[in-house]
Amino acid sequence: MRKYNVTAAHFKGLGDAMHAKVGWYENSKKMFKVISLDEPAEITSLIGNITMNQGKPVVHAHINLADSNGMVHGGHLLEGFIFPTLEVFVTVEPNTMFKKMYEEAGAFVIDADK
Image (cartoon, rainbow, N blue to C red; front, side, top):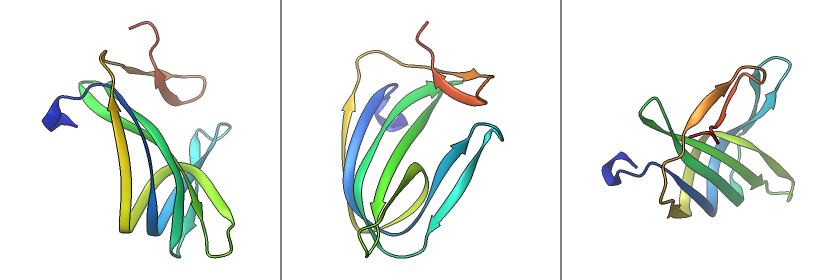
């Protein structure tokens, strides 16, 4: 995104993954519970945004993946090995959006004041 000077965008996509790691945020621990999917899966939904924090772009992505039994696993996209394809549509926003630390949750959130 730096190459194109994108400072705010949202995206959606679908495709396939050979394996992935998703996270479910445990607020009480202020960390992610990591869920590994170690088999090929259909990416039935990918959605997220791109904002700025300390001068750098930050991606926040959520994903749903269906395994070979049709069971869907989802959460924050932490890691993924894509094969054979991932189709992503990015919409660039006209105004820069920033993130700030929300101490109570231990997470970065969009700063509506900027």
